Length: 201
Image (cartoon, rainbow, N blue to C red; front, side, top):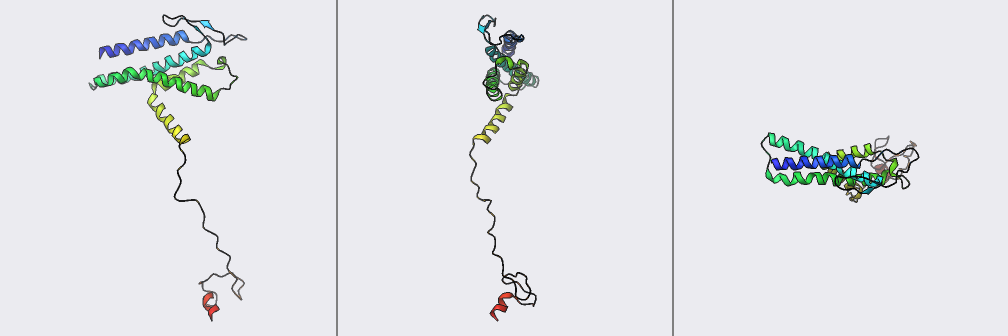
């Protein structure tokens, strides 16, 4: 259990470090936001564009949000003496799931909410980071909501047994002689007899 907590805390520290190091610099007025600059990421010194920085921000803070959920769940179960070893793998994989899901949601939102001519300089990194953190913290709810949405969009409608077809309109009845009003078959007229009976007589 102590090893599990130590690994989770180490992952949280690494995620926070990557988040701070990959955070994009504010764009200067009239400056080129798409330029590539050298950045230190842990022990790595790559040349990154702003788009790549945003991907790293989303991935790291998505994992960090998932780690918040995992650590909170772990100390609750430890306090209640209900933590089981069979859950350890789930706790270790949950940050990776949250980070990957945050990356997928970011790509979906980026592809649907921005135009093809929009640059990475037009994207607010704080808004991106907040959405990614929430997706990581509530990864299960996010998957359930996406499942509901795409099941609604992609499932073909079922054929209904009750078709919405109204009853056929009845032909207008002939007027009753002497009254000028329309009568119907089998209905008594003003004289007390049915129109069918009078026609037979």
